[in-house]
Length: 334
Image (cartoon, rainbow, N blue to C red; front, top):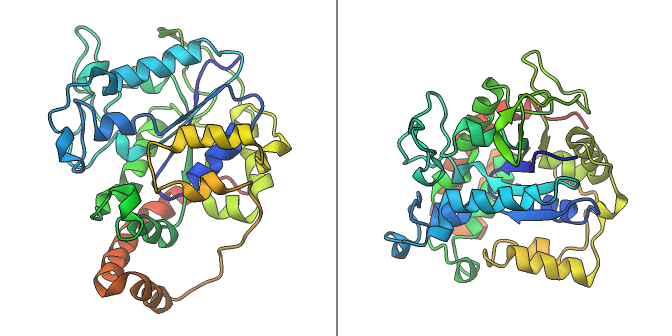
């Protein structure tokens, strides 16, 4: 029985949608939620972003953090025999311009404190402990140029993103969330758990399924996209072992009409961002570790995005390498 939905928490352009397609192909996954809280972050009454100013005065209660959470909990409660999988970005829960330590009003319970010391997320601890958190990272020298590309022509015509926000790189928020969950002992199967249909009931513990348990008792499941691309089979096997799934070779190939249709349905709300993942047929090994000097990278970015674009990319990459390297030390060894 899977009492906790599995969450892949990541940052943009981390190969996470390709990873999501692999999880969608697993025969035991009952439901996949694709970036569900992005709707609340960008378009709902509690929106926390700088984009889409036309939604500034949104009153759509279906787009609150609470409404989206309710939908996930309801779906998960119906599928406790098979896991629910969620992929989302930490930046949708810890936007840089938001006051810290305050939750979204739509998830607050009566007489519940609006502030939780040290919690940087819009979701309170009692909600976070309902989920089995895992993480995916990618070196910013790959993710940042990819994100920048989505904000300039010709791709911006599809995405609707016509300017670049360094804060949307998401590394700082991912590190904040990782550290908070780790400090609270909310990572892995050793943690204090809460049944999905009764969030007030806790203390259901299960044994760890893999060997990345730290001295603090957290069973950390963090993978690097470099490992995923280099050896997808071994990486997915390690991930499945951590979350209690049996690896299935079908996770490496998803060449069927039903799977393609499901991918279109799941990813369609973010046009222009996921075409490669939608059109892909599987994960095959590829090595991105060929070293390029900083000068070679800058020259490549200038050729693609111009002098100003290359400057912004370099500044954003350099600002996030520290966060990446910090998280990288916790990655599974593949």
